[in-house]
Image (cartoon, rainbow, N blue to C red; front, top):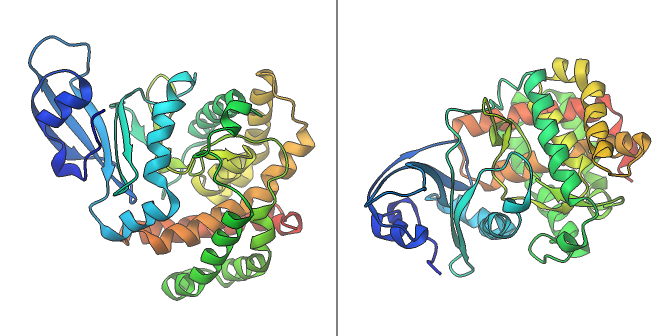
Length: 346
């Protein structure tokens, strides 16, 4: 098995020849995407002879930034994404890119995946937010993914996908609570006092919230938002599987609508889009009442708060990242307040 590379500079023609089992004579790379935990590059490949492999691919490799690599190790993102593409992706009938190679090395925590280049499809814009039409297309793919893994004993048996237990919940609660003072110092002046109040009302309940995973679990993406979606192809495509887990599906839905729609747009179409998700699941044979779906959706509005505080303080800091985390935190706080989600956190 070809080992993963340490970084973008190791994506050479000889290494690619081994990884793809096809002679590559030349490769040119260019950065692509806005990810902060790993580095993504588009590869322009020249082969020695005829092949069914494409002329371009997208590679994901360990980040050059040391803080991002440390964050990836702490939350196992490289391990998770490599295993997702190696063990699950090819059996999903949903908008997931074809994977041509996936490898992970526990020491020194390195990975590489070579993926289908879905250009000219374009990523959503986290800052501007997605349109209602694109949100509906993304929800269709989300429902297909969730239905495929709903209450699936095979997924429940994968150790790397089932990372949630009492200790991990306590660790995450302690980490996010500990990071909050720095988060508030960095972003507080740019956030409305009501946003900070909502967060501070929630933090005492974060341990209970994270420990309680009631209801059926499924293939949960964990970071289902505009920047991790591509639009404009035959179907919306879902990228960046670094945080996937076996967990409640409505948490993906709450996170997506809370983070990726401007607040006024989300308020206008929210109920219709949640109904679309519920109908898509039940049409595929999932048993889930409307009340259970809606209440789980409301409760998990806080998933975005947890992600915004945690991710913003442990990955490489960038100007776009700062604007994104301010925007997402504000949207998630309005979302949780609109839904009176605090009552459902335990």
